[in-house]
Image (cartoon, rainbow, N blue to C red):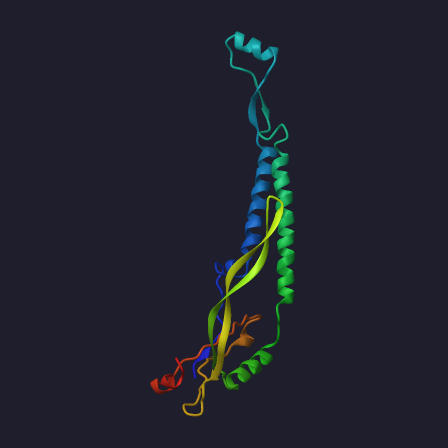
Length: 215
């Protein structure tokens, strides 16, 4: 019997698979806005002096007078602060939703999971199918329409599906038997938390078994 063990996810796959990329993106945007606020508070740029002194300096042929000022003056500092507040609210909402999803996820110990998998492996599978024969029937109905405020009745033709016969069947294992080929799960106790994903499929072991099934 083949053996299957849990796989450890790498750091690049976890943010995309667990929806943590939203928190990561919001964190980067908040830090970017914080950097812009720090640049506005600490950096200085030269500003031209307006008034009679500037006119005299230009008239005398000297360089225009300047003074150091913040690059985010005239209220532009409040724009990144507003973005920081909005992004932080979105970050709190995303963290709350992640916490709720993690609390609502079903959890159990490794022994219970192994017992469940053992019961699933030992349970007889049920491969069944359903076939329905149907046709469409042409019907008519009276509907009321309105034109220029006046009501009038008209006949509408439509097609309705009608099921003529339905049949069900199951695959008979008495002639060919059945065997579970799933892997034996090991190594659950070696990890603090493991996410399991159950899938099921079937395949015919021989041409005779496939021929006994209906097309």
